[in-house]
View 1 (cartoon, rainbow, N blue to C red):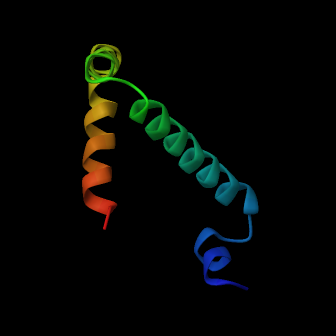
View 2 (view 1 turned 90 degrees about the vertical axis):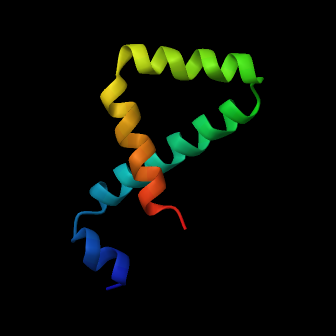
Length: 67
């Protein structure tokens, strides 16, 4: 059994969910990269209005786990 499978248990469905989340974040990063500064600001401000706590959690997680 690989280290990945040991970490995630015998249920590959859990790892599939995590891979899907990672893919969504990659897609979001690519979409943001295509935007101008004004549009980026609009998107972030809109997220902040809709769900500010999750935005802060995402920001903190990115800062904590990126090398």
